[in-house]
Amino acid sequence: MNRIIPYLPAITLAIMCTLHSCKSPKENEPNKALPNIVLINVDDLGWKDLGFMGSEYYETPHLDALAKEGMVFYNAYAGAANCAPSRACLLSGLNTPRHGVYTVSPSDRGNPKTRKLIPIKNTDHLNDSIYTLPHMLKSAGYITGSFGKWHVGNDPKEQGIDVNVGGSARGNPGSGGYFSPYKIDHITNGPDGEYLTDRITKEAISFVEKYKDTTFFLYLPYYTVHTPIMGKEELIEKFKDKKGSNGQNRADYAAMVASMDENVGKLLSSLKANGLEKNTLVIFTSDNGGIRAISEQNPLRAGKGSYYEGGIRVPLLMKWPGKIEPNSSSAARVSNLDFYPTLQNIISPEKKALLLDGIDLKPIFEDKTQVERDLFFHFPIYLQEYQGLQDGSRDPLFRTRPGSVIISGDWKLHEYFEDGELELFNLIDDPSEENNVAEQNPDKAQELQKKLMEWRATTNANVPSQSNPEYDAAFEQQMIKEKSLR
Image (cartoon, rainbow, N blue to C red; front, side):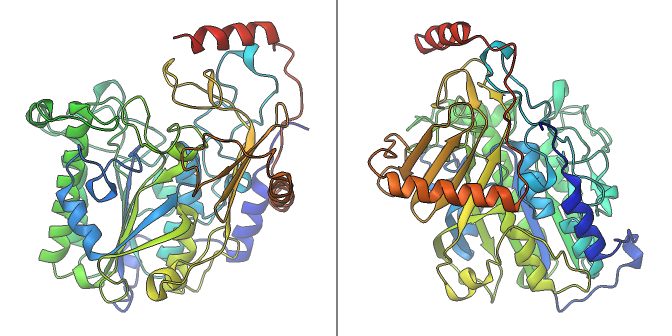
C-alpha cells in the first residue's frame, strides 16, 4: 500500500487534548508569572552562517552578543531537511510520519526515469486536527503572533495564531522578492523599495509594544535568507571588497545575513526598552541547512534537502535570564521537535499535547545534563538536485532519495529504500560523512537499522515499495555519468 494516512495520530491527539478554542487576543488571560516567548526561525540559514558559529565572512554582531547572553547548542538539528516538513515538526511537535508533511509538494520530484520507486504521497499542510504549539500556548493565556513565512497552512489564524502578518501557504517571496511592492499574502505594501526583513521586524516590534502588558508568543519566521538572494545595495557594496573564506564569499547573501542580524538586534532592543528582557525566553534557529551552492557549511556534507549533516544541522541559541547561564554551550544532540515539549513543561497549560516526539530541554540548560537520546528522520520521497548543481549528496541527481536516518550517540546510519544500502558514519571521527564504515562495523549497523525499523513501526511510517514502471536503469546511469563529469 503506497498511500499515507497521516491523520489518525493527529485526530487521536486532538481528542485527547480536547477541542482547541480560538480566542481573540482580548479574551486571553495573561499570566505574568510565565515568560514571554520569542521564537526566531530564519529560512535556509546554514549551520555556520553566523559569527558565533565560526564564520569569518558573515557579520552578525547582534547575534554574537546574544550568544554570549545565553546557551549555544552546537549539535542542533531541524526535524527535516527542507522548509515545510521542518516547520510542521516544530509547530506540531510531531515527527514527519505522524503528520505526513515530507517535502514541499509533490513528492515525486526529479526525472521519473531515474526513480526506482513510487514515493509516498506528500501532505501539503498540517491537518486542522493537530493541536499546534500556538494552540497550546493560547490555552495558557498567551497572545500569539506570527510575522513572516508560515508555510504549513493557508491561514495561521486557523492554526492557533491571533495576529498574522505575511504568513500563508507561500514558501518564498516570489517574483517580487524582498522589496516593496510585495508578492506575499496578509501584508500591505510599504513605500517602494522598503525591505521585507525590515518591515516584518517593524510589525513584530509593534506587536511587542501593543501587548507588552500581556503574556505573548512572538513567532518570527523570516522569509530571509531564502532565494531569491536579494540584499540591500549598500550592504552588498560593503561585502564586495571583503575576502571570502571556506566556501563563503557571496556579497549579496552576506548582505541578507547582515540585515537579518540588524533586525534581530532591533527586536531585542525593543524587548529591553519595554522592560521585557528579563522575563522573555528567546530562541533563535533556522528551519534547515543552508543551500550549499550559495554558502558552504564545511566540514558538514551537502546542504538543504539532503539528510547528510549540512542539510539538517542548524544553528540554535537560547536566552532566558535567570534560567539559562550566560556564555554557556551544549554539545547535546537536540532538535526543533524539542521546542514544543520544552515550552509545554515550562508553561504547564491545562490543555496539553499528550503525544510529542521531542524531549524537554530544561535539564540541559538548567543543569547542563547530558541527555542520551536517538534522533530519527524519515523521508520516503524524492527531491531533485538543486538547480543542476552537485552539493555532495549520494549521487548528482537527487538531494534526497527515499530512506530513513538515525543518529544514536556519535553514530549515524542512513538506510536507503531503493537498494537497501546502509551508510554508517561516526560523526566525531568523520563529521564530513566521507567514510562509510558499515562493512567494518556490521554489528553497529544492524543495531541501528533495528532501531530504525522499530521506530518506523511505532510511528506508522510508510515505506515505499511499489516499483516505478517509468524507471530506466540505463538512462539513470547515463544521467549520473554526465552530471558527474560537470
